[in-house]
Image (cartoon, rainbow, N blue to C red; front, side, top):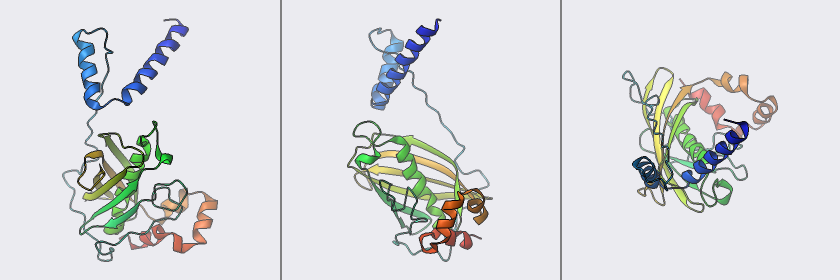
Length: 240
């Protein structure tokens, strides 16, 4: 195929993919069926479904125990760092405030603003994944574990409009060695609203040296100068 034809074909595929991403899942599947069924006026959508079990607890996982010093149920957990994009006070961040549950579980809300959109009027999928990563990571506060994301699997069930509220919930599913397995979801409009996003993740226990050994030197110096802004520093010392 000549180079010019390959470029034009690639452009058409990108355009079709962008258009497809704006369609509800039911219409995407219907389009796939029409294309294969012989209706040549309909595009033959290619739908790929990937199922992964890598973020599910293994057979040897045990329940995650709530740490004796964990915040009481109903407590709003502190931002682990004031400059965190997820839970800090940075401009146009997610500003997620997480509330401790009765066990090793948490809830939060995410107010979707125009600064969070990808397609016009719809939240960017990457920011929805970031919101899930934020609330899943907060489970470490209740388990008394300093941990970082090793794997995050996100399923997007429906578009999340700008100016909507996403109600988030997460729980710890098990722990095996240094790995904590967690899951959660985000629902539109209310805690029992339709599911818009689901996630599973694996968090790995780390020590303070993970941050001091890999972080930007200037940012580390600024953080050390303001210990009150860094609850992550305190949490690393609670970790057994």
